[in-house]
Image (cartoon, rainbow, N blue to C red; front, side, top):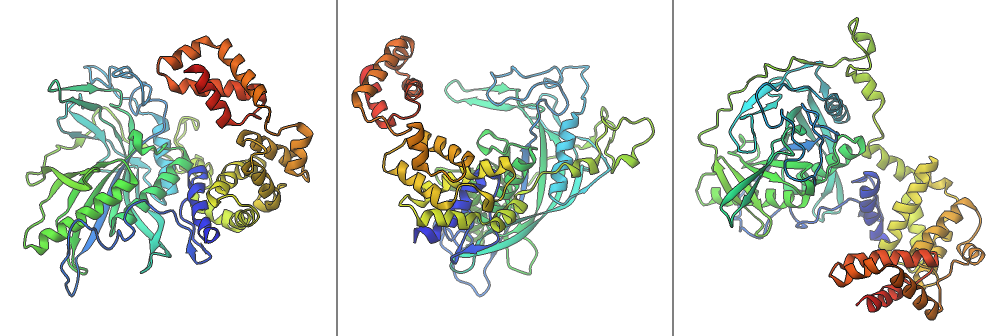
Length: 537
């Protein structure tokens, strides 16, 4: 049973390591698709609200607006550095603070990132795009307006293909496509930090002016799982491109979901917008709750309000923030301090006198596109990665989840370094299985196991046992010797011991590292930790 489910888990972990998500094939009739960790029947129902049966049911309609923070050293229009954990207001230029007399200077890196993202998402790149001012008042928006691209964005008319589990038993891989209306460049705002105890709000402008790509997806999705799958795929693409790091917990990828319900074939219903969701799992939950909430409202004879809502992850519900009945007038106007943004199709289209190194050339960027996740998936499926993994599982008693790490981390990283396929690996599945068994039975530590694997890769044909015996890499069995080494490390680092006794328990890991260095990784980590805890208590 474990072996039949394992390929799906394998590809789940490959996603994190080499930007891979949903494969197109299934193995042993088990769809090898990364599951978003929410309700198993998310596209069908939610337990919070009961639904009445009807001949034709209301269905959800979902569109997304995604703000992706551009991976750049400096901000969109200023030379201020970009950093997540910098002290408050330490990365703020005069322009970011909107002081009089300052003018924006466009960051070429941000433009290239937007073009690259547009190409990867099959967009049309506009040779000419325009900047606009979008006026609204927030305390963390010093200028009172945001520079964006409302009228003519840099990229339009793209599409994103993604996959998720579907079918009655949710065991089929369903491939879907969502249309991308546009990608536009814009500034981020600062952050408002609310102090409820003192009844005050503090402003941090470090994020003000950071470059964003806003990706607007058409309402082509019908439930939370589809939306989460689309975001996951986009996240992998952005990470593969290097245009956005995609760390949602740090706000590098933020999602607004536009949700409505309607009868199939009828006009779309009134939509609500669920703002600033920073997790794919929460996105799925928020959308599914909101769909069921709206269905409940309509079935009770009520009217869905056009409003902005937030998702409360603790209760699993969306809560109202503000209504949109009186639509805000953003007073869009052309940005007077920025000329039209011109990008060139190829070098031949460059006007006389324009430096090719300073211009943004679309074909040059296209030529530099890396391999995208969908292509990598196809290649790995063809290369026999899953077959290799299953062969290792058959020959070892280790849990498939433990084998996955070795295949996705150790094996794939070396294959990538050597530009080789799985079939060219000098370490066979049976040889890797032997190594894992030696680690499992306590003959070697995990760090030594990686050492041995490297040596097996270099010395094709050598078994794990031969390498261990030749280099004397077996675990130190002499408890007294380990005890003495631990004592020496403790005695020679009184400052670390003092820190541990003052409550900083993490410092113990440094002492463990020093012991392992002394023993060349041959000491049992469990024994070492127990001895060090005893000696530093």
